[in-house]
Amino acid sequence: MDDREDWSLVALAQRGDMDAFAALVRRYQRPVINFCFRMVNSWEDAEDMAQETFVRVYRYLNRLEPRAAFRTVLFGMARQITLNRLRDEKRRGAKAQVALDGVPEKAATAVQPQPDCVELASLLEEGLSALAPLHREVLLLREKHGFEYAEIAEVLQIPVGTVRSRLARARDELRRWLEAKGVWSV
Image 1 (cartoon, rainbow, N blue to C red):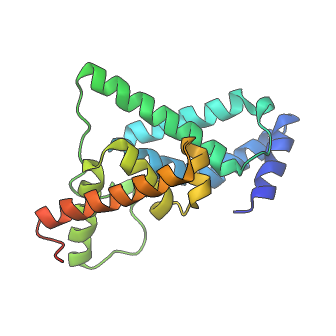
Image 2: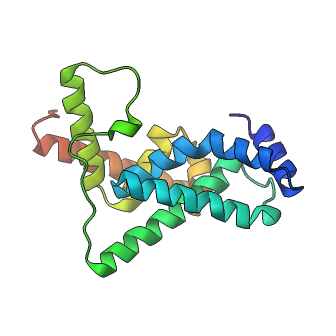
């Protein structure tokens, strides 16, 4: 996805072109939903949070400026919404649901992995859910969405060194979790 094209669409949307805004939503809807899902482990909540993210983008459309990659701004908003939801659930005492069967049917791809891969994918999803949100988000942004360290730092508003250490801790925490399940051995 070309960042210049994203910001061109933002500029058109700022001038009232709703087709341009709809193009941005179509381009990023699935990645934002997937990010939110892996943070909160609920497909319905993820869809709601993605919608809330795009509503927020629309609300602040005239304030957006191309100082960073558009996806950095977008995922920063999605991150804040998911962290707010996790904080609110923690206050209410609600526990996040763990997706034990992997990715929900809506998120399944056309290619079906082999049965042993399905089990591994399910365990990885479960392990990802077990990570602390600060570790889960950095791992998702890097490994799932392909963000560079500097982009992650911008989304999370932390130094690049902190990104690197959180990523190392997340990978280590996931590895230990997989070891405990007997999936990973050194």
